[in-house]
Image (tube, rainbow, N blue to C red; front, side, top):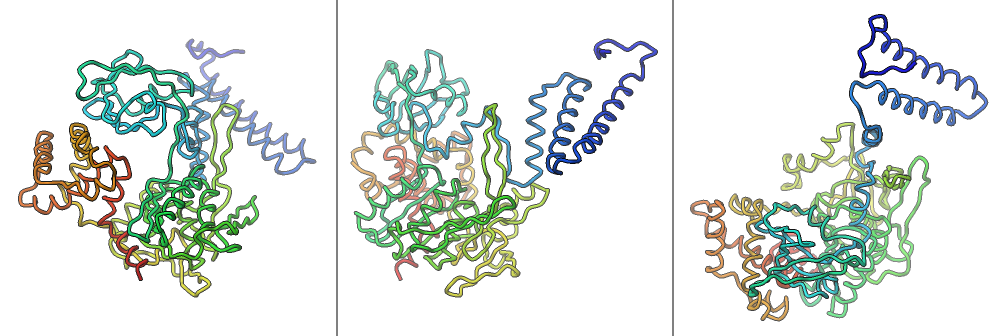
Length: 542
């Protein structure tokens, strides 16, 4: 008998839905009971899997058939899987097929597109810089260009979003996209046809010599290309006389385990432990240093903070537990759960926690977590509220989880890596006005506009180094910035101009320099008064 929910039941069938529900539930229960009796000769695991699958499938079928409104069963399945994984731990997760490429892309090291860094400024796509050697540079796109049309359709003044820009400009290698450009000094639109290609995604943000013997390398994530990028930067700095290194892992959320192991291997002698993993179905697996290290005996500092997680903590923990170098900064995030990614037939995937990370002394990196996931993810804010980011004495260490390094140094488990030298969050560089202009994107927008109109003059410096050494933010530029801010209703607090000027100058110089000379003129300026880097230089100078 079929039951049509769109037709009101006849009077004598008023209890039919209830009866059917009872019969279905009873059938599920009886089926489950009988399957256990019939399959008594099979393993308990097989019975469990069969009964669970029957329960879930029967329940989904029942909901799809009986629910008051029409539902999309596939959506319900995805919600069920998502909820199920989220109930396990904070890092097991489900990736929908539509999101799989974008989620994995940052760690794979490349994507297909036209190869530009851009910002949306005044509702217009503005090219910050074409990627060196990429399709846009080859086609003649320049920094400062405004992309006003894509495939003949207007994209300026349409409230376009970053996501929409990606959708329009990215595509498979070999495909062609037509763009219309407005360029300063040229009246008419310029038309370009750009053939998309594989565009590299870099995980190494900066590398330069801080002084004649100290090199600096900043890694933003541990991706498939990180080790290769590191070796290239390391070799270039070595040629420039690097004898000591600052490795900056602040804000690095992690990534691939093998990339972290390869980087750590560069600093550790053959045979020393780097990390080990262990889980219920995964026996202890040890990762050790090899003979390939090229910086095993030179002075080293590793910078970490509350944004350093997972693979970053593996590197920092390996250095600390082997008494190798000095860890400077603030307590790291505390993510020590190992995920394995399983791709499903429909293109979706799950990342399931299968093990935990342990440092060489046996410390578990993972911080405690409960069923309250919001509390877990808000823990960084709690650290700030509790004063931990400003005062070392406010850090809550688990004294029951003490470990000793080979040289007898006490280190702590219970979540995250505690630095050897604590450096508090720097609050001296900001005030209420700076907070407002950063939040509004005013510095970024003003710097781009200034760089665009002064590009030829700024390019005359010839190199990032000359720009850093010779360009100064004078009062005229500051006044121009304040005028721009006033037009955006971002007003300077009375009596704070002198202090704001000094805090503002390095940011304006760095952002203007970035728009002309890319990152080579950004990090060396921003880092000049960075307290962690100043402390690292002090340690390395002893």
